[in-house]
Amino acid sequence: MNNRSDVKTAPLGDAALLIQLGTEINERTHQLVSALTKHIEHHPFPGFIECVPAFTSVTVFYHPFEVYQQMKDGPASDSPYEKVKAFIQKCLEEMTAEEETESRTVEIPVCYGGSFGPDLEEVARINGLTPEDVIDIHTAGEYLVYMLGFAPGFPYLGGMSEKIAAPRRSSPRTAIPAGSVGIAGMQTGVYPLSTPGGWQLIGNTPLDLFRPLEQPPTLLRAGDIVKFVRVTEEEYDKLKEGES
Image 1 (cartoon, rainbow, N blue to C red):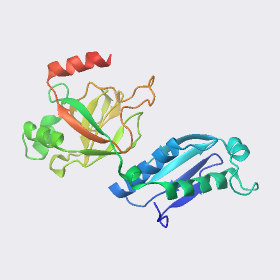
Image 2 (tube, rainbow, N blue to C red):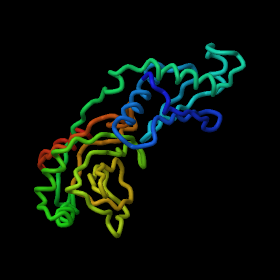
Image 3 (cartoon, rainbow, N blue to C red):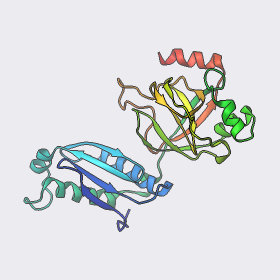
Image 4 (cartoon, rainbow, N blue to C red):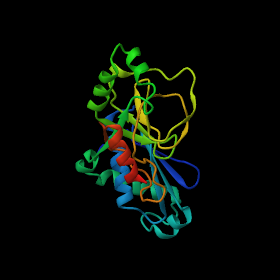
């Protein structure tokens, strides 16, 4: 990535650095966010803790003392922030076109309607469609994971068809089952944990999106492409048993 004119960096406290890679949420900016995150994680500097990608930025957390003691590049008088900033600038220069376009596709099985998706018929009614139409459109899409947030493993997905867009429920539920697949406005997503929420629920996946005992602890990562695959209730039960 040779053109860094739009990239801005700023300290975030005394142990983190914010890298702003754009001002608009779009696939190109996301590609840069994802590529930079992967590049830093694959080539960590002394004192590196973690990268946290967002829609248009990456936050890098580090141990200031380790950075100051162990990073030898640049003047000795440079602060830990200045040392990490110089490292990031070098990363941006080294990033390849392959890193900027690399992604993986993850299929998520979903059982739609009924007790799994109690709002499926409402989403269909809002859009003048049948429930089968909604399912067909939802499973036909490919959804880009822009970032994870809200709850551990919750994916912010882009790419849903406006044909099945629906407003949030006027009365949110106090507890939504883990694995619920919902729609809110132009977004679709999957609840990794049981939480309150107001999304329209159209189905449920038997997969665990949050896996605290594994590394990484989430099924999805920023930059993934998600495809929803319809399964029967019997198939759902078998897959659920495999996750237990």
